Image 1 (cartoon, rainbow, N blue to C red):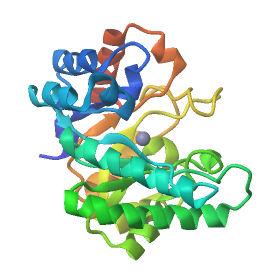
Image 2: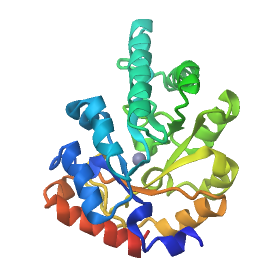
Image 3: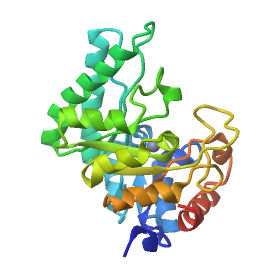
Length: 280
Ligand code: ZN
């Protein structure tokens, strides 16, 4: 049975909590996933911390939900050594939280250019140093780190790793043990090298598969992501490519959208399930 055959079953759909973050707390999100037959959840740290890490772990463990990731670690670059050390400390706490809730990986949004500089090259070096340092903590903890390349429009403020090729290069240099990639179609759909870089990543490196859609026009750089099917990304084509290298995990629906944050969250989840069946 291929993933496509399974797509009629929402058990391989996962809810990234950003999708309903303005409407619900973690308790409501967990209950909502169960109610809608969604098989996985990927919480953001603010929701886990608001619930309390131990309580969050308990409420998820009481269900059959897979925890397809914890969002997010990263943000490694800083203007000085103290800032970089503080970022690394926070990332170690993120690893602990990911372990506590049984996450399959800690997603890394790696960070952009340190404030007050124009040093993109240096920022990218700081990112790699930061991931390398974090691996010394995450590997013994058994928590895989998933580098999420972000669309180049975020290179300054969110992530200076912008392509699958960059992420693959980092994995080549730091080693695949406990390190891989979170592929989010929103960030990489435009890349002519995407098929080749998915093949290069292979099953061992693709730790998470995030979906939403690119709207035309996009009216906000961060908060105007589309429900799958409402935009221009050929999501099934990308999904076929990750299936072809053996990815058999969840499709994580992650929609940061002021439009969907104004909807009834149960309607949002029902739409997520419907779109997962029909256009993912
Ligand atoms: Zn994502």
